[in-house]
Length: 108
Figure 1 (cartoon, rainbow, N blue to C red):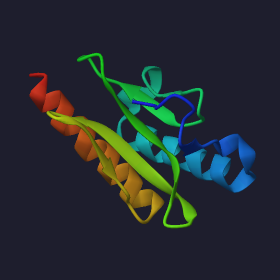
Figure 2 (figure 1 turned 120 degrees about the vertical axis):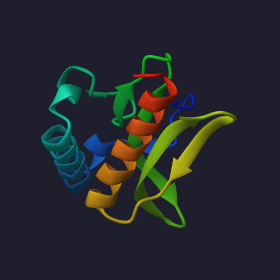
Figure 3 (figure 1 turned 180 degrees about the vertical axis):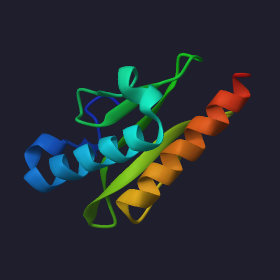
């Protein structure tokens, strides 16, 4: 789901972003330990969760409204949806909701 020349701000560019990314990872794994083998960091620095459909969920930072914000990009029937949760806990909830939707769609 990354665009070429990703529009996601690379978390390695700042310690705060990297710490937040790792906090998101820890919160996801606390709720879904089974993600341990699937959750990875992509070339843009975003967290990636591949899905059985061959698509995936991407959690990264994007410059929106003048500042870098955490966003969740998830597959949708007509492409992808972009969600902008306001807190790290909301990012995790959004990812888990998107993951559940994808798993239900896949018949898991």
